[in-house]
Every structure is written in C-alpha cells, then in structure tokens.
Image (cartoon, rainbow, N blue to C red; front, side, top):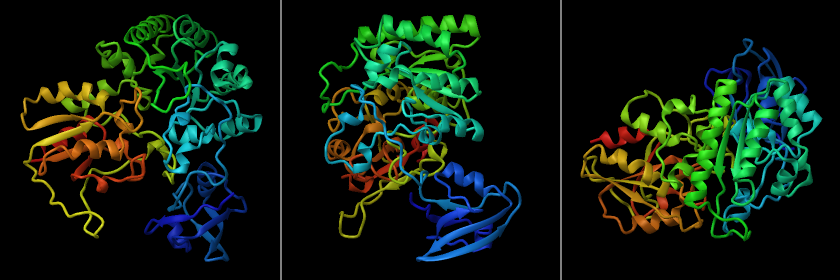
Length: 463
C-alpha cells in the first residue's frame, strides 16, 4: 500500500496552519493508516489530529487543531492508496477486452471495486464483494453504489459473466438494499444472450427481488473492431425497437405498482430505433444521466434555456484512471478553454481564430444526431456540425466520449484554417485523449467546451 501524497494545500486551511506541505506523504491520521480517500476523509474530520508524515524521507509528526467538520485542506493525488480490486469475470461483452493495443497500461485494468463504484460511478458485479465489505459500506454509509445486474436468472447471469459466482453474488445486492444503501442498477443487453424474453424475465426478477433499486438503466453492448467474440454483435434497429418496447411496457408496470418507472432505456436505443426521445418528465429526475439515459433530452433543455444549470457532469470513458481526482465523477472535469499548438518547438505556432469566425462543432455520430436539429433551430449559416467517425475503435462506437486524437486530426486537417472548432470535454481525461494525445497535437486549434447544452450555447454566442 502506498502512502497518499499531498499535491496541494489550501491557503489558510488547517493543513497549512499545522505545517503540512505539498509533497508530504500521509502515513497515518490519529494512528490509523487510511487505505483510500473515503477512510482518509472520515479520519480527517476529527477536530484534533495527529498526522504522521514523511517529508523527503524524514518522518515527522504534526499536531493539528481545527473545528469539527472543518476540511483539512490537503488535496491528495489519488483516490485509492491500496490496490484496486480487479475483476475476475470474463464477460463476452467487456469493452476492456476490445481495446486496441498500444494504449496506456492503466486503461487495460478491469476493476470490480465497490469504492470506485461509489467515487466514480463504476459498475460492480459484486462477485468479489465480501462480508467485510458489506460491514464497511453499511457502517460508513458508502452510498450510492452502482451494480451490474445483466440478468436475475442465476444461470444466465453466470454465463454472461463467465463466472460461477455470478449466479449467487446478487445476494449482496439484496443485503445492500436491506440496509438502505442507495443502489443504481445496470443491464447491458446482448443480442441472443439476455434480450427478448430474458430481458422480460430480468425486469420481472427486479420487481420481485430488488424493487428498492433507486433506478435501473438498460444499455446496449459496445462492439469495437477489435472484438474477438464472434457471438457479440451490435443490435439491429428491430432489436433496438424491441428493447425500447419492453422497457416502456415495464415502466408502466412499475409505475402502476410502485408509483415510479424505475427502469430506463439508454438514448442509444432510441437513436438506433429511430424513435423520438421520451419527455423530460418520463425520466423522473434523470437518475441515470451519467450512463447515457436522458442525456439527449437534458441537452435540449439546457441548450434551449429551459433549465438554468446543467443536469449532470459528463465523465467520459475511463475517467477514474491515471490520477483521477478523489472527488470522482462528482468533480468538475475542466473549465472551458482554448487549446492551440504550443510554441516550444514541438508544434508550429497557430493564431487563435477570431470570435466571429465560422464555427465547427466536433462530435460523434450519436452526438451529431442529437445536436443537428438544435443547431438548425438557430438558423445560423456560420455554425456547422462536424461528425467524426470513430475509426480508432471502430465497430458501433459512436459516442463523443470515445473520440480520440487520430480521428479528430484526420477530420480537422481537411477543415479550413481560421475557423473556431468546439470540442466536448467528455472525450478528455486529465487533458488527454484515450490514445494519449492531447488537444495541442491536433492540426487546428480547438476550444474545449463542457459537455452540456448551456456551455455549448454560450460558446456559440461568443462573438
């Protein structure tokens, strides 16, 4: 287990008053060694703190005094100080197995860690969950959690996870709900595996066994060009239509019996089936917004000015890896900024386009389908959608969050110079694309815009 390292100290904070400095390693708080940011913050809430640190190899002990609940004010570089609990399932549809070679190593790590579920919204199958984990979750109220269900039939679930513990691990879901832990569920639907009658069976199982779920999203599997599982394929439009129909039928059932719809289909299904998105009220507060459920409708509301604040924070894929902030998916991703080529000799200098220059909005095929009618409604000839086909991952990869530098560069090099190019921040993690490149590597300067309708509208009105 590595000691958490301080990367920033807030001016005037208890940490600064007590002598903590950037670069210090926190060895213990009041004699206890924290194993993650969750334990660290619980310990740091104490009013009287004895902090054991290592500074340049020298062990020091600091005494801190602060008001109860006052933040310590020392920012830590990562969320977990011990090892990430890796996944021992072998799901046919796992996107990690479908990644191209040559990406940074941390992206190939499959996690099944309930702490990352809490911090970043990652989904856990609970196949590695234990009694000790349950005790900690309940005692420390580590909530909400996010659980991959996929099927409630034990045999079907075990087959889908390729793990015999998949047949029994949903007992932990029942235990979490029994202790009033908020849980959001997910069903990844795979053609000929858990769709059709099996999806009906799973939703019936949820009603019977897990009606206390906070929400449940039904999402399609992703298939890249590196997929090696011959049975895994994208949905056909007819299959997407069938999934939407099943979900909407069960929404009526849940609404009638429980007073809420509970289950929601991902936006991708409506796009694939060429069906209009449900009304905003249907989404009941958009509890699964971060999983691509209702994003199109909220974007429309934001863009039109019907709401004053964004619905959620877009996180992108693998947002938790490589030193992601301890605040997880709740943290702001980035402030809108302009990224242009550097002048250190590694890139040619490029002048920032005029605020009145024509605008190109970069996005993937799904984003294009959602944004195009919104942009058209403005009646502006100077704004256009630039749809970027994802050749890097290939397959049915069509979301903006998986755009990479090579695909953006291939498209941008064909675009005129001097225009403004807007890029959603959802495709960046710590300032980098998934392939490791940065916006500064692109052949045209781009403006990084928060992935919500309010930010896009504001960027378009900057003249």
